[in-house]
Length: 234
Image 1 (cartoon, rainbow, N blue to C red):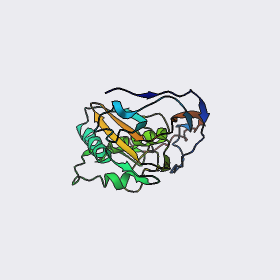
Image 2 (cartoon, rainbow, N blue to C red):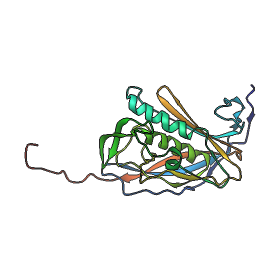
Image 3 (cartoon, rainbow, N blue to C red):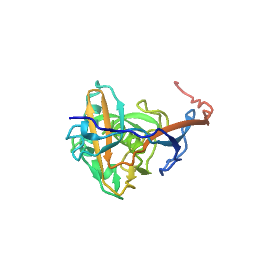
Image 4 (cartoon, helix red, strand yellow):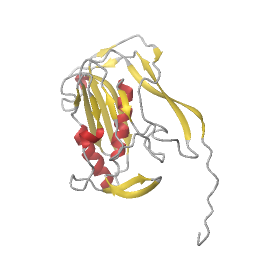
């Protein structure tokens, strides 16, 4: 199968923060604050003809792709990532339609096959069913930003995660969702593929020859609070 490439004159256009998100609280103390902006460029767009039919069944253009990596040693976490990705893979967001992570994946329960793994609760790592699913939502979130879709709801973790740069994560729970809106007059197809040590999310549609990149700018640091001294053994 031949790869068809449509070449465009390279240009850099500042698009601004065109997406809308819920920050769900202030940054953690001691955390670097980053101001994310989205830049759009008219670079060459590779058609999806070189992609597998399973990943891109309609033969549409690849709008964006994003990959994150994980350790294969935590079997429970890997299985949770695999299950969540399989439920997202193949979803098509209709023109002017909205995607909801929680509605698509459903509740992360043992009955649904999800396992115990580390999750973040109140700023601490604890064991919980469905640990690792937030890496799927985070990978999806970054791919959505790069595709030109409008993020309508997202929530950061209370702790920094290791698989994306600061301010680029999207936590999901029973109370917090990841949602985005398709502003295009055509459907957008989602591919979510898990491989050994990573997950790749791609969006396919009828693009306009634009490419989006996320650019972060540090605005400052939040100083840590005074140390807490407790009487007793420690």
